Length: 200
View (cartoon, rainbow, N blue to C red):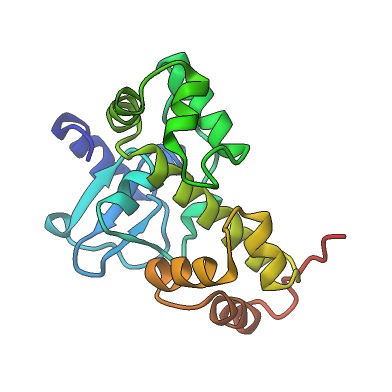
C-alpha cells in the first residue's frame, strides 16, 4: 500500500476521477475485492472501504481482482517506477521480454547480477510486489488485451502471453477474473459487438 501521506491526495483524485492520476495508483475496494483505476466510471465506494496501491501488481498481490469495467490493463503507461534503481528497470524490461515465463527467478537475478532475495526486496520496495507477481500481472493484462482486441484463438493467446499451458492460462483467469477467458470474450462481444481486431 501507499504511504498515508499520499492517501488524502489519492482520495481526492479518486473522488473527482482526475485523469491526471490514471495509471499513477490503483484503488482496492474491500467490499468487492476488486481493484480499479482512479477514473473508474463505477459508483465510488465509501472512503473507509478503499486502499491505494502503487501498481496493479501490488493490488493483485494484496488479493484484489482487476475491474472488468475500467480495465486496469489499459491504464496509461505512467511508470510508477521512475527514479528507482537501474536494477529494477532492467528487471522490468527482462520480465516484459519473458524472462520469468518459466518462473525461474534465480536466473533473472543472475542476469541482473544480484541475489534472488535482493531482487525480491527491490521489487517489493519499489513496486509493492514480488518479481513473480509483477510478471504474472503483466501476462494476465497482455492476455486480457488480446482477448478483448483480437479474434485470436485462446491457445494462441495463452502462448503469446507467456502461459506454459492452456490449463495454467484458464486457471489464472478463473482465479483472477472469476471467469474463463472464453467467458470474458463472450461478455465483451455482448457489450461491444464489433470490437474485434484480427491479428495476422
